[in-house]
Length: 274
Image 1 (tube, rainbow, N blue to C red):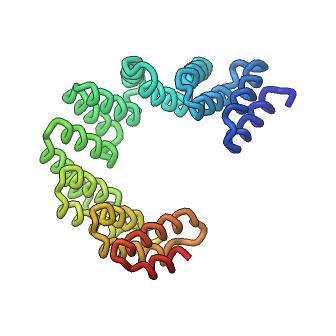
Image 2: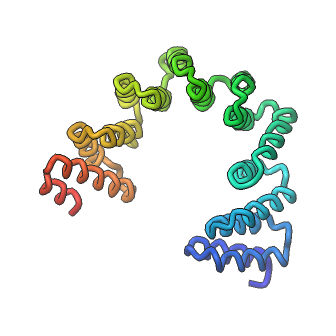
Image 3: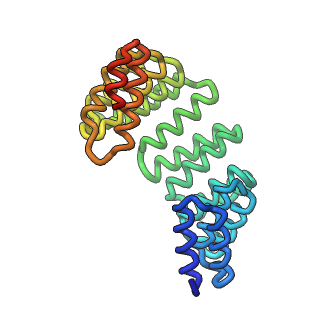
């Protein structure tokens, strides 16, 4: 290629071909021609990350952000990487500044709340969730974050009540996703019977084509050693998986076969895998 975008696109192809070392070279060539090519900088960060070079990846994201500070997607990618491999205090500072300048940004308030919770500032975290809910209404991700934070500080029953109140308030508008949140929280507090009941409620109203609640519940049953129950559900899922999702069909087939093997039904397991 003779121009920066050509090198950047060539590097993208190298990444798709699982050749990050060569991609780094191509992205670097693109950036020599045009240092502010943010797509090349993001690509370079991804390539460096694939090679385990986290400091170099972070430098690339920092540079990309300096050229395009108003790109929210880039900001979130940079902050997530900075939190994991750089300076968490910087992330909190930037998110706090954004909360002041853009108080309606629910996603930022939610992330800032979680950062405060991780830092041990529970009351500030809960206050930020109040702001997020005021700005964007009661959302499942905010409810989940509030319950999770309460659970982390030993207020499990309060977390359960937060979710229960949310589900009740939604009334006829409750979704399978809402019940899945409830089921997962019950599982985290080892209330298995309550979790299973919530899964059943999610299954009753789930998307009949994708069946996300059934898939998750089958995995829960399988991981808890309830092979007979898991087999029944995996078999139903395996036989009704939509066309065009071969990867999921293969996963379900593998799990179904494993469940059958646990019951010494070897012939049936082999027939599933054939």
